[in-house]
Length: 172
Image 1 (cartoon, rainbow, N blue to C red):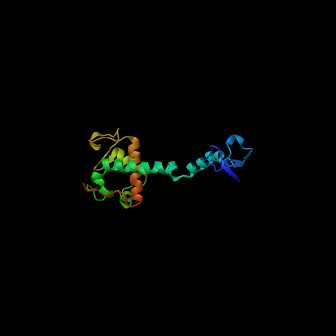
Image 2: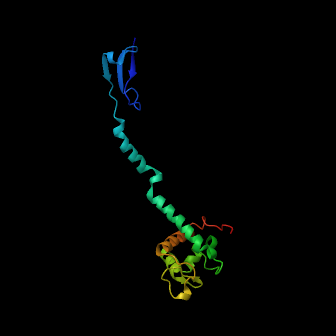
Image 3: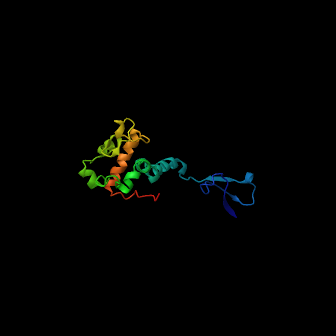
């Protein structure tokens, strides 16, 4: 009785080398070795992995970067702004909220406008920029770097456009 048996170490590809012979014969006495040609899947592996990684939502760098920026903006907002602007409101000046209708009414339409006010201050709001002057118009607390104020401006504009859905009082 002849059987086919695998004698190759390439176990990830079934029966990549088949030997015909009697199952009870010693391997040295086998008469005929037949190689079965199987496509080289290992040659296809790198392009398949590259395609998977490129199309994977985990590797979507712009989306990840944007999400990180939004989270960083939210953190900065919680540290520097939420005391007066909890949920986009304004506990000092009710007509100067961070809601779109109030921002537009007060001439604040773009991220650049929000950046300037955050950096230099306006009215009762102190400026938070590192080079903010005059001294009485600027915060006495920690100053923010330019890139931090930019993230804050982006975050405030995004939240205003969405009606402040993502920031609420943390109950402290």
